[in-house]
Length: 163
Image 1 (tube, rainbow, N blue to C red):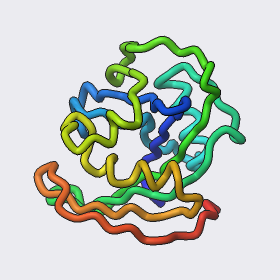
Image 2 (cartoon, helix red, strand yellow):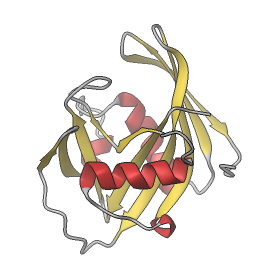
Image 3 (cartoon, rainbow, N blue to C red):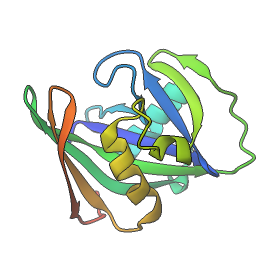
């Protein structure tokens, strides 16, 4: 079982992103999420994490499991996170920027997130997020890092059953 969950909340052509104030990925725009608690399913974890980090309460029907993001780095070995995408209505009101314990939340346009000139978004996020949003199949997004730099990225189909 993986250690973490990550979720991306989409509102039309925008994504609610978190600029992390501490490691890992300090100062990088990312999704929201965190560690699974004992006895928690990945779906329960991401719903709890989204609420804790944003105050947004989503129903299980509003989120979709999209796969996993795994990594192998020079210090910690192999780990990963279960990845989810949530859709909210384009008229959904959530004023940002908004500072929370984990960092700063802000709506960012998909074009801004995907821009190759944008070094504020993790390079691995720009690789896996479009696939998570637009491909109904679940994938393992396998990343290899060295000193925080993405060295390699592999896309592997997986079973969408979390049980």
